[in-house]
Length: 254
Image (cartoon, rainbow, N blue to C red; front, side, top):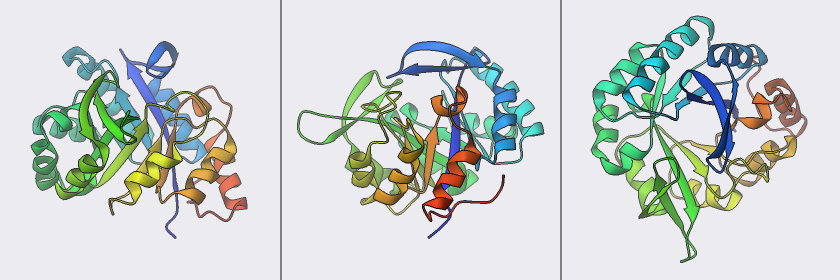
């Protein structure tokens, strides 16, 4: 089994790390560069930045954050939020990102995935998905920070993402996001059974055993969390030690 990755996620708004529940009740957490440096020190395998304002002005602030972080952090950086064109990919990678995540814009313009994969390589292209249960017993894809239901079937969408050359999927369950009730095992299994590319679990992690559960019960290759790390309830090192005790392989970069 490949080593599982632990990925702290930092939602950035106007140059500050913020956190909310179910995409609401946003509050400031701290300085993104300092947060990223601390997670690097703790042994994070990657760090994700999402620009949640995603305006043009917000992007300028965000690229400055990426440049400063890239000077201090030596694990892969993935950056998303407001990425709408191949040029946005190029700018973000030039600023120091190793991967670029697209979400809403990929749904609106799926060709962006294939164009970016062709130019920059699949390893640089991550497609983020915000999905939620629907009244038909399945899962629907949402955009615009989980606010707009696209009436797009999650299973169809993940297959298209893979076919278009994306290197990875980051699956966020709106149903569990910020609730600390655990990752959405059902949704993850639904997606992992339909694609061969790596799937990152996102949304709902609330305690140490949620990390081991997601790797024991799904084929997810990585687990992403925010609140637990930001509010210092757990460190990355503590998570990795717990996983080792459960005989789940992790990288020794602490």
